[in-house]
Every structure is written in structure tokens, then in C-alpha cells.
Image (cartoon, rainbow, N blue to C red; front, side, top):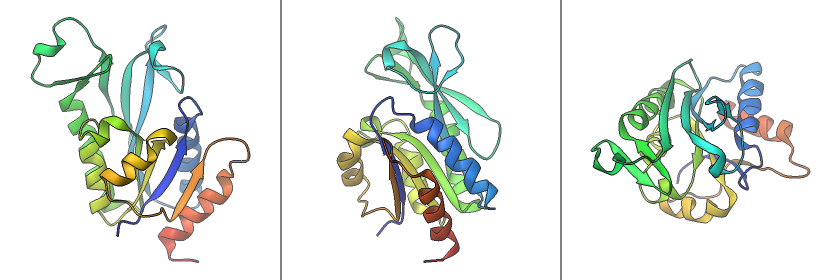
Length: 194
């Protein structure tokens, strides 16, 4: 049985923004949090865009939760990307294997060193054993409590792929989402409180 926690929501509901808030609140309670967040690169300025439709994204950047490192894990596919050995083409994006390996290394380290390890944007790519799949496996193998951010329409497939039971804490974004309750449940789960 895998212990894990879940933050879910539909596409564009602000999962990345909520994760940043959850991480900040956990740290304020003294909980050590690590892992990887994933931010969109907007077409207009090339900087992180918290949420929005993929057709307005130029790519995705993995952001180290326990530090300041960043790695561009995906860019809009361009001519010739299919010839690169280190690229994985999915939908309209080319994923960089070396950047994904860097993000996985953060998760592997933090799954051993932190109390909670985040893996953001777990979806159909990970179900197909791509993207952050290996980071999810590393998170589930470590002593830290994995906190997975999953698109709601992919939740069943993600749970099936990684043989997940019910999460110890969960938050579905939408009206009435109680972030404070979720943070309290996460903190209790790693401190042994009931």
C-alpha cells in the first residue's frame, strides 16, 4: 500500500498556484517540503504562466521545490525534434529527457530528505510511462509522503498505473476547496497526529 496525498482539479483551475500556497503553509508549520513543480511558459513573454490552455503555452519548466533550480522540460515541437535522441514527442510538445532526469533527481533526493515530496502535473504522459513517471515512482519509493498534483480527468488512470490506494489527504479544487484543512491533514499525516 502506497501512502500518498492528492491535489486535483480540472485543467486551468490553478493547481500550480494552489501547490505554491500549500508548500508555503506547510513550511510555515515547520514541515520540510521538496520535489518538483511544473510551470507553463507563455508564448507572449517566455516566463512562467500559472495556468491556461496548452495552445497558449510555449513549453514547461520544472522548478525545484527545495531550491532555486529550474529546467525546461518541454517546448512546442519544432521541425527536426523527432530526430533528437533525447526528445520525446507528445501532442504538440517535445520533452527533454535530460531535463526530466534532473527533475527526477530532485524528487529522489527530496523523497529521502524531506517529509513531503511534491510531483506536479501527473497526467496521461506519466500513465504512458513518460514525463515525470520515474519521479512519481521515486516519490512513492521514499519515506517522504508524496503529494501528487493530478488533472481530475486523469485521476483513475494515474491511480491504476501507480497502484495507488485512497490518499491520506486530498483536495479537489473548485468552489469550497478548503486549503487550510488540506494543509492541516498533510501536516498531521507526516507528524503522526490523528
